[in-house]
Each structure stands twice: as C-alpha cells, then as structure tokens.
Image 1 (tube, rainbow, N blue to C red):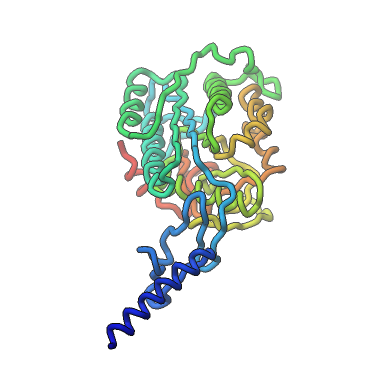
Image 2 (spheres, rainbow, N blue to C red; image 1 turned 180 degrees about the vertical axis):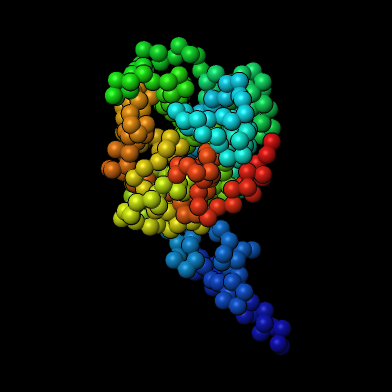
Length: 348
C-alpha cells in the first residue's frame, strides 16, 4: 500500500513538473539545488539556445532574437617574427612572456576553436565559420596556422591579403598630416578586408578578432547566450567586447550593469578592434567602420567609439579573454583573471 502511495506521489510530481514547465517555470529542490526534470543543478548553465535564457533566481527570458550563425574573422599579421614582438603597432614594448608574435596568434586561434567547439554543445545547429585574414605572414607561420585550422571540423579558411589591396582607399597620412607606419597600413588594410568579408558572408553575428586575444573555454558560449538574452530584453542589436580592459577602471564613469548568462556585463564607451556585432549593425554603420581602415585617427578606434555613443556596447565582468600585451599596458591584461592558466591551456 505504501509503494502505491509513493508511486502515485511520484507520478503526480512528474505531471506537475511537466505542467509548470509548459508555463516557463522550473522546480528546484532547495535541499540539493537539483532542477527537477533535467540532470542539472541551479548553478549550471540551464539556458536553451534560441528558446529561453534561465538565470537562478531571476527567472527566464523567452528569446526573440535567436542566433543561427556566427562568422569569426581573425586579423593575422606575423611577418618574420623576432623575439620581442611589438605590443601595439606603433610601440616598442614587449608583450607578456616576450615571445615571437606567432605564439600569440596560434594561441588566439586555438582558444577560439576550443571555445567554438564547446559552444556547439549548447548551440547544436549553429553555423560557425572561422576566417583568418592574413597580411604578410611568412610561409612557415601560414603553415602553422593552417595546421591548427585543419584539426577542427568547424568551417575554416585563410584569406591572404595582397599588399596592393585597398591601396587607393588607405590614406598614407593620419588626421594630423603625419606619415602612417607600414605596420599601421597593414592593420588598416586588414580592417577593410574584414569589413568586405562581412558584407559578402551571410551570418547573423560577426566577431572581429585581433590575433592576440586568448579566450576562455566558455567565452563564445557566454557571448552567444548573453547576446540572445540581452538583445531580446533591450529589443535592439548590440556590440559585445570579450575583454574586461584595465583602462575601463582608470576613470570614474556612470554605467549600467546587466546580467547575461553566467556573467555580469556593463556598458562601455570604448574598445579596441575586437568586438562582436550583428549583420544589421554592420550595414547601419558601414561607412564609419570602413573609415577606421581609410584614415588613421587618434585614438585609432575613434569612429567605433562614436558608434558606442548611440548603441549599447557591453563588456563582461570578469573577462572572457586576455589581450596579450605588455603587462603594464592599460589596454591589455584583465584584472581578476588567471592569465597563466589560460595561456598554458591554449599552448599549441
């Protein structure tokens, strides 16, 4: 008799769970934080791509802006590396670990592949395309980059830039009339190529990535889930930056804090050239984005920052990636982040 009562309670419990889940709710066992009906606990990622974002104890958000495709464009530049590669295009400081530039490029690509493969566990039908736009890397470095790309089942390719591409569009003088360095010209050419590709490729989101950002395993997962959730809540397309730059803490400025999937995100008004946004935003600000590749502004990303005055750009706390520059650079290593661990995990 006791077993019959127990079985009846179990049946009614399962029926109740199924019923309330249809209304968008979940039942959590407060004793062990187990979410009833699914094999997960309350502190795990329980969001469903394209359907709903779930944050305990904030509840769920029904997704209206689902992501079906992502194109990642990595700007690569590793010509005949020597020890002590430059931190920035116009600086002579050495990067953290003081290695040839190709080592940072390889770790960037390796980390983004691993992060994308991890994201596919949650975004099973997501179409991911990784494109490396390379300018002047030597044959040995190209071979090493190709080797990494060939080891994944994700869609990948390398686009080699011609030095004469966009030659008539790039101004050799900056806005102050000073001569622009060859390294900076290379960067500008690569920007124009990246924007050109974003016009040609059919994708919901585009992630423009510099080749010295080493990502955490969950970076792409968090960015995609957070984009779906926050763009749904705000009813608008966004810009996301994966890095929590130290310079963001050098000034006391008002901001807004949002909760994405498993990270806090805050509004920022400045980023470097690594950012994620939608196809719609690229179309909307196409001329402004192209201007970064046509004339050298000060700061270089000035046109991008002007866009952020009109649109939401969000940065995660804590960071999802480390910008591998000089350890003393305010544009580099994020605070409260295990740099060495992420660096070592992505060794090639």
